[in-house]
Length: 141
Image 1 (spheres, rainbow, N blue to C red):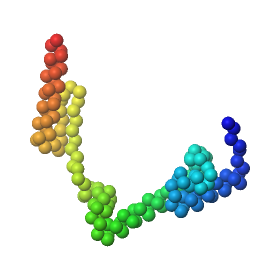
Image 2: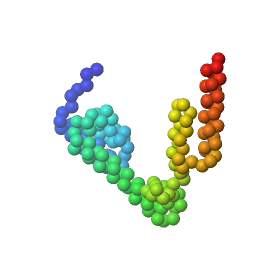
Image 3: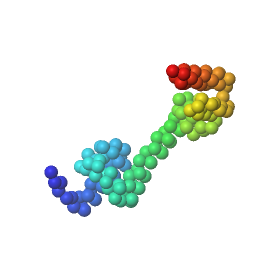
Image 4: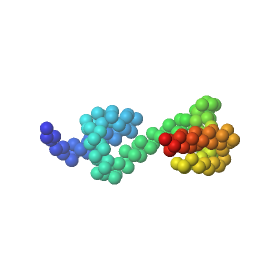
C-alpha cells in the first residue's frame, strides 16, 4: 500500500500539534494520536531535523526537572522515603547501602583480592579448590 505524500503545511501542523500535546504533559503515544501521526514518523522527523529533535528533548527534560523538583519538595516536607531516594541518588558517595570490593579470579584458579573480608576469601578459596580438584579428576581419567 502506497502512502500518500503529506504536504509541508500538513507536516508542520502535525509537528505543532504533537509539540503542544507533549507540552501539556501527554505521553509520546498520545501526542502522536493528537497530531494524527505515527511514532515512526516522529522518530524519522527527529532524525531528519536537529531543531525538532532538540525541541522534543527539551520538553522531555523539563518533565524530568519537574519530577525532580516535586521529589525534592516531598523530601523537604518530611517524606522519609523521598529523602532516602534523594540522598542515595544525589549523594552517592556518602549515602549507599552496598560497599564495593574488588575481586579478580582468572581461569587458572589464581585469586587476587583487595578490600575483602576473610569470609569472602574463604568462600572463594573453597570454590577455587573444588574447581581445581574437578579439573585434576578429569585430567586423570
